[in-house]
Amino acid sequence: MPRTPNTALGLAREAMSPLLTDWMTKPEVQALYILSSSADCPDNPTCFDEESDFDVAVVLDIPLQASEWRPHFPDTCQLIADRIPNWVPKFLFHVPMPWGSMEVNVHQLIYQYECDPRTAWPGEKCDTYLHKSQVLHDRGGSFQELIHHKAQAARTQLGLERERLANRITWDVREMSLRQSRRLGPEAGHYLLNLAVDEVIDCIYATAGQFIPNRKWKLSQLVSRGFITEEQAGILRDAIRCDPTCRSDLERRVEALEMFCATIDGFVTDGPEAQQIRSRYQHRLQLRGSRCADPDGAAW
Image 1 (cartoon, rainbow, N blue to C red):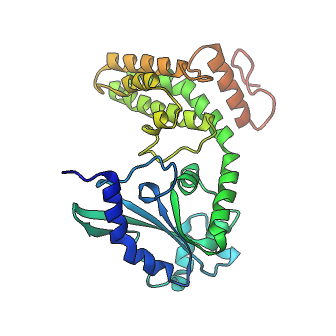
Image 2 (cartoon, rainbow, N blue to C red):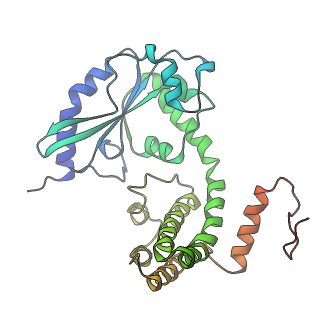
Image 3 (cartoon, rainbow, N blue to C red):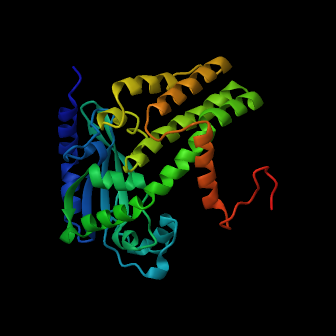
């Protein structure tokens, strides 16, 4: 008989308990968090089951000079490799479980690197630590403060991301998908329309002022978090369903996705309003405030 998600999570946490307890005693550990479906936290939209990985974040307190910061985190790690404790585990390993084995992912962070103002957190990372994390250890609550600081900075970008996605939707839902189908065949068109579906979903989150969650969960959470209705979800499922070798099915999908967008306030895929969205977005890309082309398309 399949175990319930709660039973699976309980067994997983029992199996991980010795390791987690040991890591909390290490003097270099600034914070220790359980993440995603493994976390026991209020309103966690993800659910642990026997298909889940166990995610934990180990935040290390390691001396780091400002000059050692690099845009690519592994490059900084290479510079300070001799300061990283030997006990730090591999990112991925497996733990035996009654149902087979469980993959464990140890997300390893350096507190000083994360504190640096040059280190920006993407929306998915902010969403995970804000809404899908359980604190096991946080020295002085410092990492919790850092989470909220990074999320506040990332929220300032949500409006810009919403504008970018709204612009892409005016191109990708119909124009680009059908154009590439004519150029390269229906498979290319279906592929681009799949990307357009993803852009539409991301735009729903950004419009709601929410960080875009991990791609594993963002489709299923549209209804559970109240962003769309069951009826709208049915239209979206029609847009996702496809025969990748069929051009007429591509046209059907385009119409279904346009129908779905029409049910979302502020979503535009075609017509004069779409042209206005494009113009406003293109204006942001210009080096000069004036137009780069006259109404007839001649550059000046």
